[in-house]
Each structure stands twice: as structure tokens, then as C-alpha cells.
Image 1: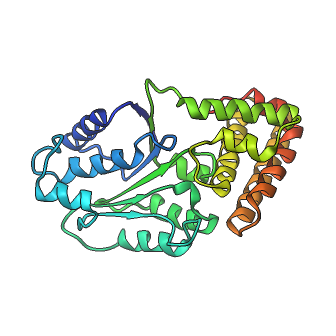
Image 2: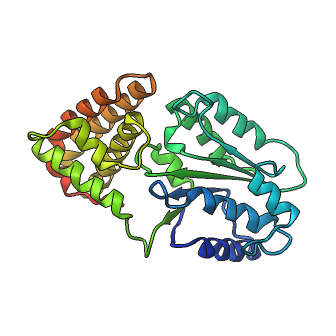
Image 3: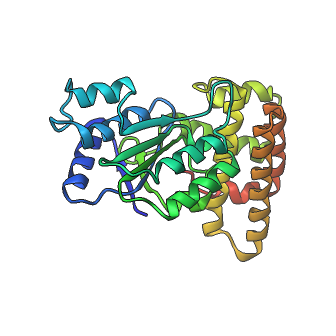
Length: 280
């Protein structure tokens, strides 16, 4: 699948308008951007571009746009973790997959917010739908980073990076640099909890910060594999398995602080390889 960078919501509307006119809409989109980058707004603009009677003009108040904004449009459903849960479980994704097989007289769009929080079984279930897409069914995944997603999911989506000119947002650049220092040099005399908190000031809690650490390390390691020597591939592959194991532990309510501690500990042996990698 191809990759595109769009820097504003106006560009989003224009991009999708052209894709719709040329009948080149993808069956799956992956929106990548840090918290606050407007992924949800972008997704809703996409939906409006398909259903609006007035070309989704800014400020449009037609019935279609109102229902999309109010969350009660028949052709748009937003999915996320169930109330009280931190992960998007397989039952939620099964509902998405079942919707893809419904007979309908209009396009249906499923938006999965924070898709990096899907459990492994949920991702495997979604993959089957991505491999056999229905013509009138579109899936939009929003993520802060692609690192926690199965590579096969990423490869089957048209990726759109939200940012200015394709550059990483400053918060993620800062987090990557800080994480690199921790992996290479340890925590020093600093408090690990405070260091991680400063890396991701926009995160709501320690669990979300731990998810971000795992996501960055996974993306970091996968970038490293593209440039690593053959002798290093086994080490990086084993490290990725460790990270997926830690992600499952985090999904099972293991302490986020313990998960971060273990992730950094397991990253240290491959630290030099990771430091040479580039994280988008």
C-alpha cells in the first residue's frame, strides 16, 4: 500500500475529494500522528467528504454532516476500547468484521480509534477482513505509532501521516531522543517514572506511556532490521518477540512501570542497532 503525508484538514478534504472522483478510494486507511494531531477530526472530514450533499464545505450544516458530527450517521461507526477497558478486544473487532458482510445500499465506514491498543487476537481477526475487503466497506485505523501493529496490518493499509511536510511532531522527536539515551546509557540518577512521564507529557496515565514506549521500540527495531547485518537479525527478531510478550503482559494488567523497566532492559543488548535506526 502507498503512503501519503497531509498537513491540514483542508488537505484531507481535498485528498479524499480527488480520490472519490477518480474512484481510487482504498478499503483501509492508517492515520498516523501524535496525540493532538487531529486524527479523529481527519477521519470525520473523510466521512463528510463521502456523504455530504455540499462537498463537505467548512461549516456545512447539512443533515449528513450533522449526523456524522453527532455520532449517529448510519454509514459511520467509531470503535474503541469498551468502557472500563484499556484494550480493544476481539469481540469489538468481530463486530467490525461482521459489519463488513452486511448487505447495504451505501458505503459504510468503521473508524477504529487508538488501533495500537488492539489485543493480538483482535489484530489477527481484523487482518482477515483486510485481506478480503468488501467493496462498500472502508476501515480507518488511527494510531500514534505503527510499531505495535502487526506488520501485515500496516502493509494492507494506505498510510497517511499527519504532520507538517512529513516531519515527525516535536513531541515524538523528543520522546525518541530521550528513549535512545535511556537505552544506551540507562536511567542515570534520574527517577524512571519521572523520565517516562516527561517523554510523553500528553499521555493520560502510566499505562498509555508504557504502550507508547513499546510502540516506539517496536517501530525502532523494525526500522533497524532494514539496515542491520545478517548477524544482527536474530537478535532484533528475538527483541521484537520480547516486546510483543511485554505488550501481552501489559494487556493483562501487569504493572506499566515493570513493563517499561523490562522493555528498556531487553533493549540494551541491541541498543547500538536501535540507536542507528530512524523512527518516523
